[in-house]
Figure 1 (cartoon, one colour):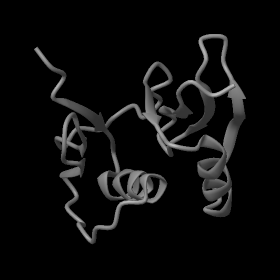
Figure 2 (cartoon, helix red, strand yellow):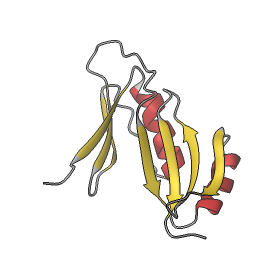
Figure 3 (cartoon, helix red, strand yellow):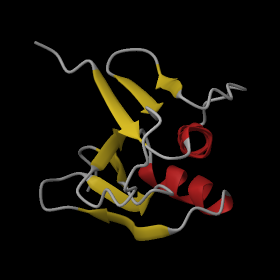
Length: 116
């Protein structure tokens, strides 16, 4: 069995989808207000609203993206105006992580594995 999809439920599909495309460096002009696919290969990342009002205080949700160079991504996100909660730092398990949040408060980590 494989994890097939991670779906973020939100009140503002366009805003959240645009945020993820910006931080993941993905180009798209999709403006669907109900459902958008952000990552299509492997485990998909989607943004969705079923017409019901969402809490959007998802403080227990986090997404981790493995990147080639977390320091370069840190510099790129700063230029995009993304508020970084924690700058890149080597964790006890060996990954170098940085932490920020999406506009709904979901926690996002960019990490490089095996950095010293």
